[in-house]
Image (cartoon, rainbow, N blue to C red; front, side, top):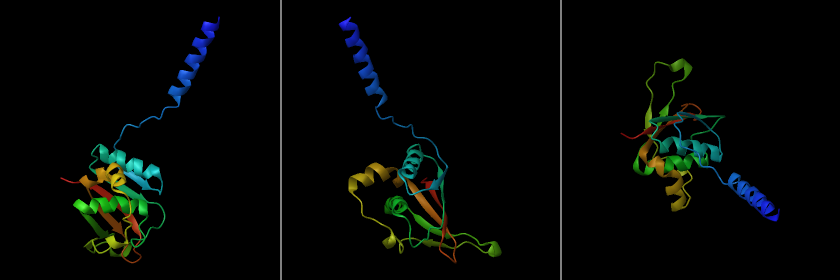
Length: 154
């Protein structure tokens, strides 16, 4: 009888330990991501970049200015800028649909991006971004970002 109790409690203990183990997610192609200043955003971008998604559109929720890029997004753009390109493109306004879009280099704006983070964090979390370029689409009058597109390098 005591031996059955030992087996029962041992099995119960082991099953409790197994169910509390962290699960790892399988990276997946995510082509459209909404920017939220959370770890979920980082995980979605990292998963998508890890499986070589060709193009990832990041839609901005709320008004985000080109002069006040959130730190979380700024880290991704900083890594991309080290070996790739970060381009600014103005989105056409309703009344100026036929006007050509302007393209500028972001190197002058990079001083505004937050760049303080550790080497290990950068390589582990943002290493996949080295294989991408980025284009920031913004409204020319207000400087509000419409979206950011990460594109896999050729």
